Length: 301
Image 1 (cartoon, rainbow, N blue to C red):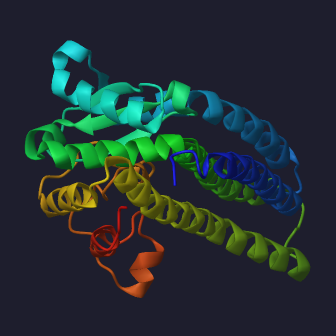
Image 2 (image 1 turned 180 degrees about the vertical axis):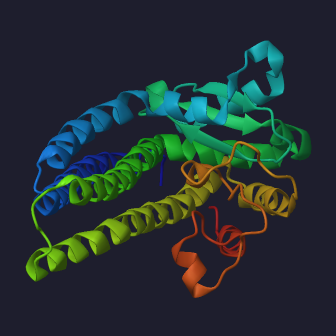
């Protein structure tokens, strides 16, 4: 198994997700426009989804780095961190990513970028200060696995697409309210009311379904990145210990938000690690216990 084992498959999935979201957004726009008797939502949704799909491919990494307020560092700022990344990149056959630091006490990390040639690894100050070298190598290998498997592109595109769905549904409710209050015609027929109720239910459930897809994709990619990263270092215990330390740390991540939470190696929100079956549907990451168990059960030949 290598870092490129799933790369081609993930590239195909990326385009499937983009096209699927694009079609879904057009469908929502068509339904909403039909209800308020104006095709403005459909027109806006087509144009907006096209522009956002394009921009999410080319600029998603910049958007994420801006949201998290991460800052680039040079080799002389942290030579040991750079050596770790360089050595693992050589082993993995990946180009050297840019390294950014997030001035937060919570130990955490994430990777972003549309491809290995334009990738970024972000680590927090707490991660550098609290982890031993073998543990830090495990975390970096995990993030390089995301880069090599093209998970970073999938994750950032999903963020943008889910945001489009949320904005569209909010716009629909505002437009439908304005349309009903500004119209002089009587549009309160039972059939029209029924159609409006269907559209309202669709508007409410669409962001929920979109987020469930985002969470499911994120959980699957984390398990794969754990396994690939462990194979890269040949030492699963290093990543397992790192996950334990990160999950037990009580510091909050001030820049964390729902849009970017699934990018981090461990859920950045503290006190929200319940593992009930219902909560698992909305988790951005698999339970830490399951990830550690899987790592310690790996056999490296």
